[in-house]
Amino acid sequence: MAVPFELLLALSGVPIGFGSLYIRRWQTRRAVRRTPLTRELLRAPGESLASAVDVASERVTDEALLILLWPLLVTFIATVFFYPKGGMTDGRLVATALVCLSGVGIGVYRLLSRLKERDRLRLGLDGERAVGEELNQLMLKGCRVFHDVLGERFNIDHVVVGPAGVWAVETKARAKKGKGKDSARVTCDGQHLRFPGWTEKEPLEQAQRQAVWLGKWLTSAVGEPVVVRSALALPGWFVERKAPADPVVFNPRNSAFLADPRGGVRLPDPMIQRIAHQLEQRCRNVAPRAYGETGG
Image 1 (cartoon, rainbow, N blue to C red):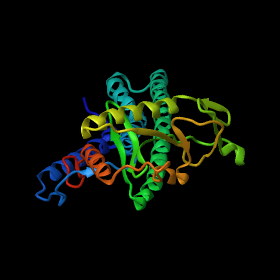
Image 2: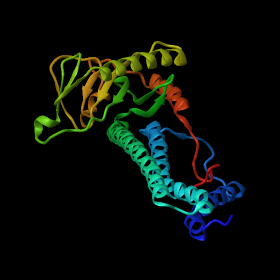
Image 3: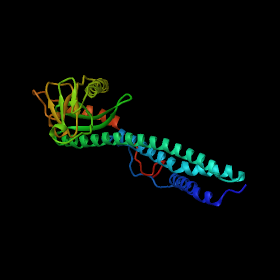
């Protein structure tokens, strides 16, 4: 049975595209070039989220490709099946169109869901990078700053070690609704975060849990008690504190307090170095990507 030449031509781009990708990866694996870097890199702000965004983008691409390929595939199969049976009658054409449209409809729904998830991840990534940029300025005040510190099936967005002690900083990026100053104001009453139109409690509890875990881990790693305080950064929001809160809720542009000792209590420099050493060992685990196995 002969397959219509037009259909073969329409689908020819699929094997060509995948074949080109395979050849590229094969060439990369056989390349004699290698990265000049001799050790792994420190984790950057939003390292985990950046990887999640990459995965989400791949899924968006997959869904878009399926939407494009589904009608071609269904039409190809229908034509091949009906070709020796008198071709595409009106009834067969309607059935083929319904199958195409149903598949495309499901694909569009899945694509929109993937896009929404990617937007959420991108917002979180932007927030962590913005907070990281502000916290990195604290290094001018003698602090060491680490990002995306991996815990036990979770990560701590930022850790600041300096004269003021050790801080575990959680970041929450929240989109604003509406315009005006009131739409950018969040109130913390010590137990809840009251945004314009909604209230949250979990970020406060999450920041506390992470600080407790980090304190236990550093105490074990250093061999001396290490107190870790918690903070919650809300980039882009004006924070109004109605009562003292643990964690400290703040706009990252006002992060100087993380480096300034209060009450005359200062973390000794040797202890800062010991804690920073342990954190660096935990955070230096990012493999250089140039000339890696997957290429690009």
